[in-house]
Length: 102
Image (cartoon, rainbow, N blue to C red; front, top):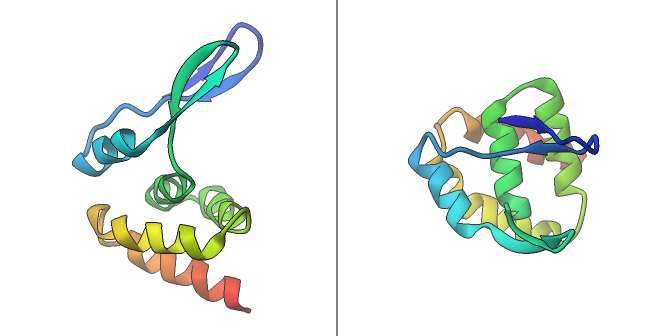
């Protein structure tokens, strides 16, 4: 769910429809924004969300997320949870990893 706050901030709110999404929310890490604690998905879980969304921009976003931070650790985390998501995301993940190796 996409929300636009009164100050112009865009927020994507995850409402778990599938068991893997509920697990993602459980793994989310608390951060403080303007004095309010909110739970934010781990980088690997953001990639899983992008892979599940499956659009061109989503896959580009997933690739960009993989380029930030410790890629090997993020790859291991994605691999640990990717089979919880729909089977078709595995192919998109393979394509993303292959493009990264070029």
